[in-house]
Length: 120
Image (cartoon, rainbow, N blue to C red; front, side):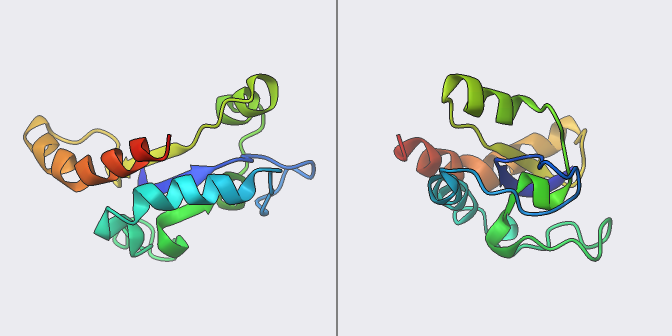
């Protein structure tokens, strides 16, 4: 897990981790930023220092392919085949948080979700 919003494209023709810009890159960045700006820890860009000390996401967002290459992912498929704009929101460094930690996740992401919905 991590704490970041990633946006298309998630892969590139070369199959390596490199920025893969979609035709709607500016829109995807705006959507991703609308979410990350409301989550202080996410927006700072280094949320999982203990687990991934070199990982850094400027303003808490990343192009999917620049982070790591995912060929055939649903996010890209939906964008290319149905014109559905999707981002992937990673909510935390721990994939399976304990149930008692869920209220904290809600508080960290409530404002982000509302801002994201306002983008419609």
